[in-house]
Image (cartoon, rainbow, N blue to C red):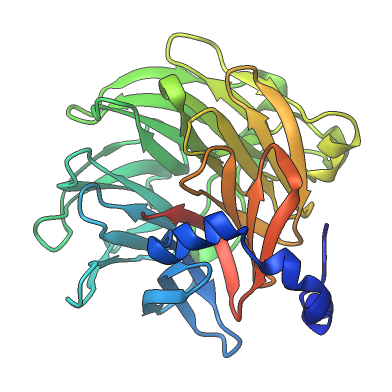
Length: 369
């Protein structure tokens, strides 16, 4: 259910059961707590990013100069990188030990879109960037073994590359190009809504060569492709944000495999309208067969079966946007801008475990270990 945080805290006695983990899961959590990472803001207005467990709080945190967005995990190390939210220019890599964080910035004529992904061996970091002078999307390439120094870049083959992922094998990148032109001098203005061109593209990261491009039907040219989850069998699940008339209510979640056409699937009945034309984050569960897609404007987290491309259900969570898999199949951590941390089961959405925190959680969260 959708609850106000103060109401739940006032009813602490009645909420104790809702906040408690089952005994078996609680024992395992104490011995080997799951660690997540996310950006956030506290009640003093301080931005930070943290590695934390739901039950025990922070393991490590770092203050950020501005609002953060997504987190990328470096394979084989536990190191994680927090990115600035568009149009921010900073990134920070946080080691697992007590070594100081490593800060890096975009080029002066670029800014980050808030997402990135590491190469399979953890040596390179790919970042989504806006070359706003030339109105084109760029994928920056940074050496993670040398202070995240930028060593190259290649075109995103579209405007506004927001999210990226690497297919199994590590050579092919999928890019969600939102298609919207922005400029940091123009604030939040979106300059090309009448003729925007979102796309889903596949690129060879060793050469920058465009391997495959998918553009939605002309009637959906204002359906901005934003966020990605990579499911079993290299099935890409993409979440969209619609910039056309509010009453249109197009399908916002799509499925795609290389060599096929994208398939968009609407939620059933009134749920589709309740999403309010906005998907904020997408994540795949530990088994790779179930996806959670958040709709923060509608206060819903939706769950989908990947192979059947079928809606499974939804959880209500006001301003809930961050979704991260737990170690358990069909299970997700949900984060809210109202301070909630919720452990939810996609197959039993009503049986969620809620905890309050002193932070306003930002758009994304990841499982670190």
